[in-house]
Image (cartoon, rainbow, N blue to C red; front, side, top):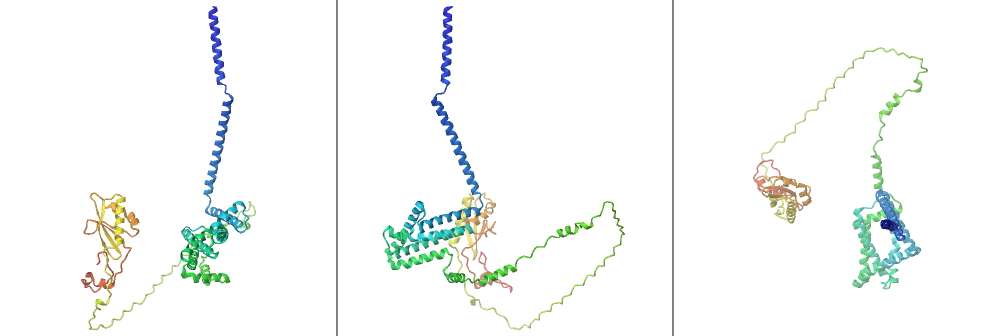
Length: 451
């Protein structure tokens, strides 16, 4: 009995010790608590940053959905702010560290041309806010301003005595003038470089203002008229015509009038509910309407017969054909025909059509290309490619003939890019004209076959 009791007590103590050790193992230590707190803090920070990024993305998407006028105004105001910063930095040296750095860089690269940048940016900001930028003229502006700055920078460099030091270049044409004017003067002397740079600057000015050389006097006259306040008489005439051509005022619909007439007058309302008004109506027979007799149509006088002059017995003879000039010999083949053949073959290869151009008949204005199909190829495959063929040969006037009369081939008629002139004498001396003796034969021209 004593042995059994001792064994039971040992088992109880052993199981109790195991439970205590397991409970102690389950209890987290200080490092575990700290790690869990750090993990929770990191996840909270990650969720917060992600929310901010997503919110910023939504704000940016909303900003992209703004109307073009608002975006243009924002861009114009940004350019205006940058122009004010440059003016403060370059003109008054009051832009702070950032403005001073920008002024230093601009004076180093552009020299005295940097003084004109604020004015140019101000004008650009005003134009940007007034009207949208024209994409088609953006390249013209880049070329014009580049030429203007290159020519002006080189001239400032030569006018400043071609300085070599950095401080001296800042008050001349900068590095731009050193590269353009200095290298050009070293190559061809200053006496030749100065006129060349003047021409480059004038070219840039003409490109920027979209003024051809033949319209310079007209533009100068416009500037003079604007300076003295004179108005253009053509503009006043156009304005008067536009005023005279204004559409007439639209009439108000008659429904409103009918509604106003149908509305009861407040004075016509009954005085009281007990008053009864009786209207005796007597039918009146309608008088028959008298129809007007139709007026007889006016008889136009018979046309007078033209007087036939008496014919003489003299025989009329046609003038000799050699009085008409002889035209140029027709072209049998040209570079344009080869380009069209290559384009047609490219279309067939692109759409995997077993067809080939085997020949062509060139006319003065149109050429018919003969296309032979491979075995098992339907003619519809060619007709379905009419738009692709027109796109490849760069011509909207493409005509497909399937088949060519008398030939087992499909014809593709395409206008010539190098058209030929047809002389009247050549048409009258042709075989088709000389073999036809009808008195009403008229020379109209030549077709693809040359007739």
